[in-house]
Length: 323
Image (cartoon, rainbow, N blue to C red):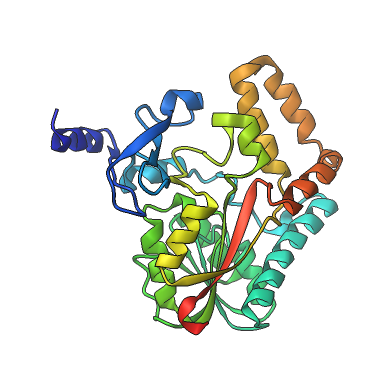
């Protein structure tokens, strides 16, 4: 079958084939096939690694028209306002996480006020924190229900759609953020290039991605939440993400693991249990989600973060023309 015929067949099934977004090569080796993810991904979807630059990506993958089917209204990142949280301790923890993000942005940008763009802002919790602290906050969110929640609950300026289609003024932002978003995009290169054009001289970009060097990835194998097919279209190492940032005109300032790792750990463990001990999955998952259970794991998770082996890693980079 010709390449054109294969691509037509993939499109018919709601999938498409693609080249490496980093180097443009069409020369990749398969790492995982769909069946190794225990039904988490559609048939045919595979994670591959470019033989030339080592970028990992899904190929084939869902088309843009199909991908929305994998983001239901109850998708976990679409969380309600902190004030709606029932337990006081959970309200404190969620608030602390948002404050930590804001403080890191203020530290690395050298600003206490400014204009921030959050790409993939979900229900607007982070933007609400920034707005509350005096920042001019703008979001982009493709999911209608999440975008509407951010606008109606918090009064935020949220553009529904993608960064590529958003009408935004060039060189008008001091900070652009991708919190757990870049791996979901169809072209990280294009997202980073557009971000550079939207930042003012000296502007900062902050990105969270699943940490390829995490202990979790080594423990859970194909069940690691960092793969999460077919929503995660890319898996980055520090080297491939650094190259994408450099080629988009950014200079890296620092890498940190600061995000809480407990719930991603539980999700990966649960996926592993479904594959290896299905009868134990429900009781163990219930136990791990008991309020306060996470504190038994916090010392080990903190060590993982301090050694940059946490489940999520963040990179902070500045627009290079300002350095």
